[in-house]
Image 1 (tube, rainbow, N blue to C red):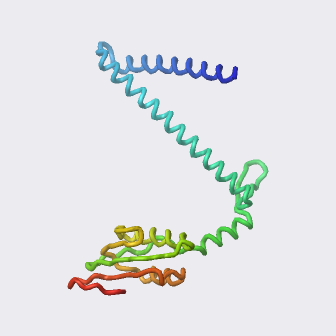
Image 2: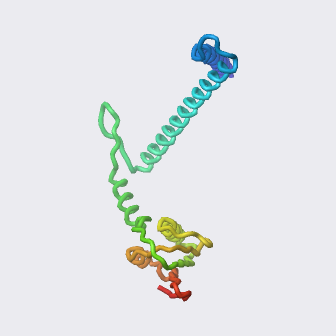
Image 3: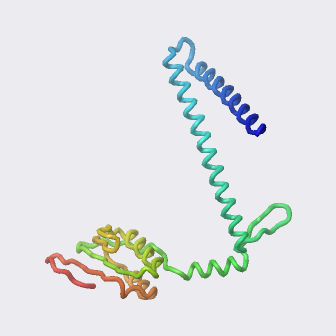
Length: 192
């Protein structure tokens, strides 16, 4: 309790000294004979810059903390290990290599070659809940291709469907849950 009070008191004193220093810097920056408005403007500019630096420092510290937690979790899971005597270096463990291989083999990439076309394409799908990861993958791919969502499972766009995308749907065994239609210039609906 006593340490917290002391910490708060020192922080308040430090803030007071910083405020005084910022004020003197504003006076010196404004120049001889400057109006109070000019000094106030310079003071506020200095305070905003100071606050921005503090905010950036907090963001950097938070990123470092999250990175340390992530590394700690990977060590705990046995995915990485430390090497080296003097300086700590990290390397992927055997378990980590197996996990990497497993992750690479799970789902195809989410980015395909985009190619526009004049006709409109509608993609509709009804993928079961137990295949949620594949359904989320499909949504991400469709969005990356440039389709617009009409409904969670209905998308529309003037984009040519890449052949590799169809092969990946087949490989993932979800092609049977996906319907792709093309609307021609004559107003007909044609199933692809």
